[in-house]
Amino acid sequence: LILEGRLERRPGSGTYLTNSCYSLSASCRSFSSEMNSRGLVPHNKLLASRIVSADKINSSKLRIPLNSKILKFSRLRMGSEIPMAYQITAIPTAYIDKVNQNDLEGSLEDLLVSKFGIFITTSQTEISSDFVDQKISKLLNICTSTPCLVKETIDMDKRNRIIMWNKTWYNAERFKIK
Image (cartoon, rainbow, N blue to C red; front, side, top):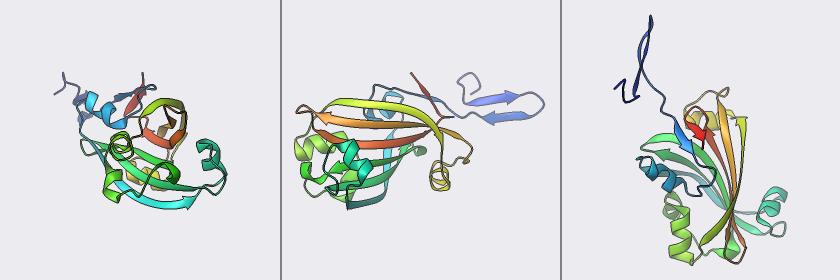
């Protein structure tokens, strides 16, 4: 287990489970494919979902008029039952019909293709670092002083429509950017 990197020996202290570190691709759009490529089983837990009027931030990110209706939801993203990330997503309701709550626990790209015929062709990604608030720290099982990688992604279809915007907080102790 030590050779596999699952345990770590600390002289004078003992043997400990290691905190596995996974790479986070700046170019990869899909969390599910990212987890699958690392041999982890992706899973999402829907935390909240509602139709709201787009505020200034959402209307700017999605390039839609202020107060347009959007589906806004948050999910805890997991790999093999380990909390990996917290994500907030916004999708203009003009592009999607009614969405079942269970649909939001799977792959969004698969949902967009299978239910609405929308193919994501382009993504713009920006990665920064930040600390999390109390709510996110509890969900990710980390301290508020633990640094996080914050990945903001804007996904577009072949007609250059912005289909969704999401902001994801990754535990920086578990991920490195490649």
